[in-house]
Amino acid sequence: MAITQSISKAPGSVSNVATGSYLSTGAGAAFTITCGFKPRYVLVVNETSGDREEWFYGMTAAHAVKRIAAGTWSNLTTTGITVAEHGFTVGLDTDICYASEQVRWLALG
Image (tube, rainbow, N blue to C red; front, side, top):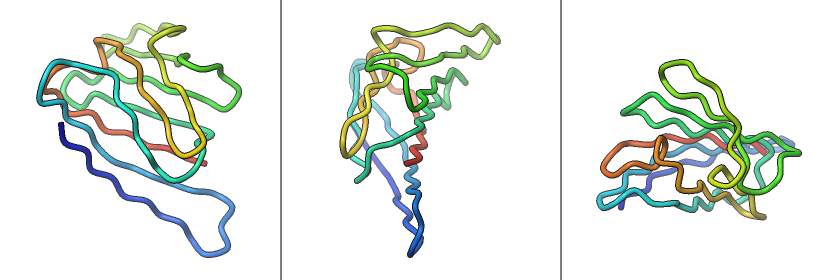
């Protein structure tokens, strides 16, 4: 497993931005990112397949809106994104968390 990330906080800014990538070197699995703030929006994109999921402020835990590369949209209710005080967890959705596929993420707070 390899995780890279960068965090940017402008002085006096009320928002936080964090970006990074995740690569599972074993079997696909849920993963947790610590970005240093509680996100209000999270975007996760599987760079290999083009599939993506988004979580917006007000959604409940493990929920997300997913779009697969073919263009189909769906609502995730158990394998989506769960936001925590200092980051978020991406649930085991096999379109997003697939073995040896590069995932990129963006968190806004």
